[in-house]
Image (cartoon, rainbow, N blue to C red; front, side):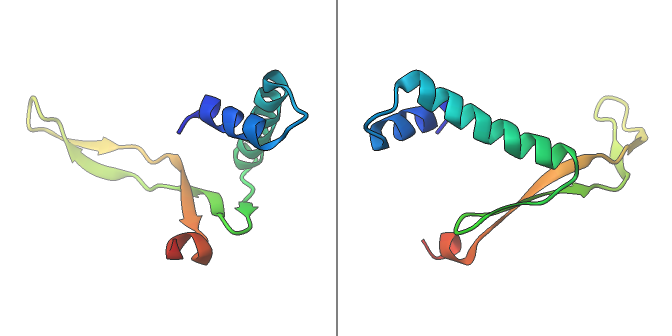
Length: 89
């Protein structure tokens, strides 16, 4: 499923909304989630799950061409934890 599929589902479910308005609504929701995660906030969608930003530590790796050991720098990543309801489906 992609953003257009979500927009189509919103359009189909809502009788009085144009497809363009459905696209704007889905875009606004996704932009709001992105903005909150960028600020390091947790995003909880009841009945669906929770998105949060986690920091990954530095780790060791191996250059496949040379076999040399390298350090892979840590970075931030997004974790998703599904709700109990979603797990049971």
